[in-house]
Amino acid sequence: MKSSFTFGSIFVLGAALAVSVMADTAQTRIRSFPIPTPESQPISITQGPDGNLWFVEQNASKVARITPDGVITEYPTPTFSFPLDITAGPDGNVWFSEGAVGQIAFITPSGHIEEIPFSSSGAAGGIVTGPDGNIWFTDLIGNSVWRLDLATRVLTSFPVPTPDAFPSDITVGSDGNLWFVEGVGKIGRITPQGVITEFGSGLSLPFSIATGPDGNVWFTQRFTPEIGKLTPDGDFTFYPIPVGAEEIAPGYADNLIYTEFGSSKIARITTDGVVTESPVIPSSQPTGITVGPDHTIWFLGYGNDKVYRATFSR
Image 1: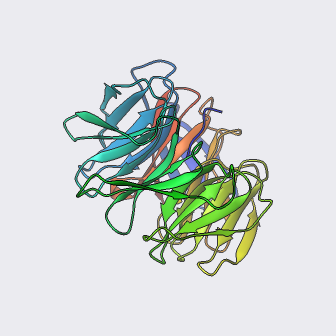
Image 2: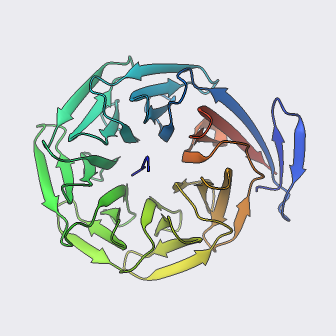
């Protein structure tokens, strides 16, 4: 769920400036693409089934497509809904949550959007394609995890055991279950049958969650400079990082990638907890991040209305 609320040396195209950081000898090339709508506040990005990247613009209430070459096309949502999260669907469409209303929606590769209401008082948070081939999403206000059966369009709600848990970002684990973060300081696991188990307590506002190449789930915490790792059996490990992390996603090889909203950097962390940061990417305040085709990494400049494409090499 998103909220309104290293890489060695780096070469920034257009600025012609190389900066050496840390001991890693990797090289990074970053290119930015301005979003047509000003003050759009892009928040979440995913690689679509069509080979393009798709992202949501929270403040503009739009869904946008960007080609690997950087051509952006925007589509306004039928309901002005502050969309939050986005995921590739198993049906060839891209699905997204509408954070200000009790709806989720999908957009076809040609740009047609269809909205699906699930609650008159809910607010959709994180969204993902489940291991069962259905769409799963969280309801921040309704304190539930929902499943949309794609074949029948039947919606099923599974209440989170902890009251007012504020469930948000959600991912598919290596164990065939789904894992999600709770604003009350817990991590939840839900089976495809809807059985929920909660882990931990007192975590510092878990915010974003992703499955790492080691088979564990990794998560960021809004109010502490740590990234957490949780095994399928429920064992926690915490790794210190230079500053607080925002969004985390699977990277390449043994890495995960994440954004640092407050410092306007991106970074990577190995499964052993070794962190490498980029230099400052001015005014970017990066949010969503994902891997793209040809080992590229794409992330969003929430602060300056840009999409960034990064390429790392050694």
